[in-house]
Length: 117
Length: 110
Image 1 (cartoon, rainbow over the protein chains, first blue to last red):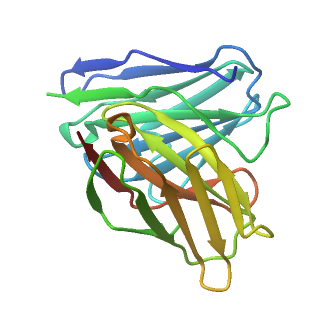
Image 2 (cartoon, each protein chain N blue to C red; image 1 turned 30 degrees about the vertical axis):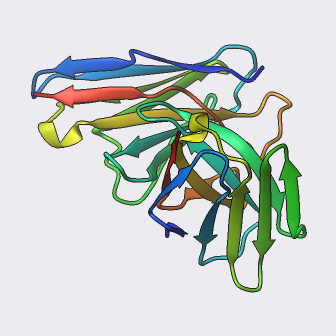
């Protein structure tokens, strides 16, 4: 149980384009989803927290107009990287919690590798 | 948010040996969790220890927590090659948010 998927697993795009990444909880209803960013050999940095049906809460230093987050249902959250630049290349990981599961534990997706040329 | 520090940054051991990783953090916590990440993959939850607990076991894993020193350790006994991964501690301060440590890269050699 508590499976989270991400799509796509890898994406390569040109500078200036937008990329959408999907995060789905497959077997539970995720009241809260989190988006993280991870650079090579580094830790996870929380970008934003989203609760179903409400606006995401962004961490300090994360541009909300650049990283658009939508959590329209209890099983789906999307992260759109707008006007992507090479410095946005990174590993993006989502996680989810809720649905009667332990509120303290987050269940992670497999990640999306974004490369911006 | 401030990250915790993990020590060592990298650890290489032989199969069958024990691996110990340490985590220090800076703020008060409700709980501390350990996660594993295989290269290029998502994180897998290993174990959660609450602030009022001192030690917890799960299979070959043993976690300790010392809130007075703001530190935790993860011990993996009888390591296997499949344990090769990065290990992260994460502190929970309430509201479900987690703050991750810098991670330890463990390599278990045959």
